Image (cartoon, rainbow, N blue to C red; front, side, top):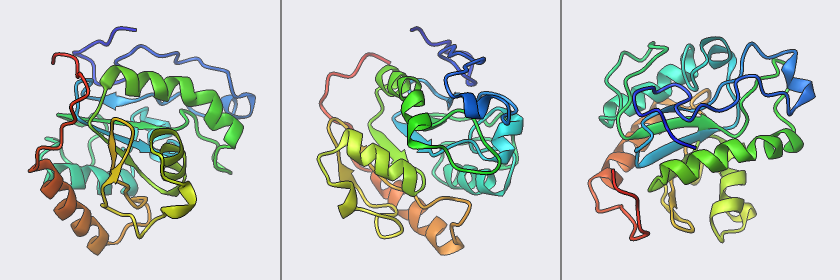
Length: 210
């Protein structure tokens, strides 16, 4: 699977007519695949598209939660667009979700997350990021289970917000869901993530040339 380096939206050309989850096909507006820099060191993973992203087709855009997250990325030097942009200019960062479709009345089931795992696994494999940022409790639970040796029961939000967790080839830096994040929590994340970016965070894991 080759990436379209010039296209930030669904750069890996993933199936935009996916029907793997029958319960999500009818209520969704569209399939929302990942968006951003395919050579990024930082990969942010939420649970599912929110209502704004379901409309815009871009994760973490078109609503208050997206504006909060894009504001954090701007402060960290990873976003060059206004926080209300639905096609943000991102550098060194990629945004995606565990699941690609939204049901307006319920969160995704475990089966639906499992159905979407090949999309996420392909993005992680192709991007080969240094830092995974689980956004929200559900994403944290799944990524800790899949990419660390830590028991998911031993780590939770908000306690782990902005903390560095050693993974298998990655570090995880959990983030509180921006939909419920306070100004203080946003400031704390910017402080902690900026400090991480100032370190030699890259792992010796045979990264591909950029």
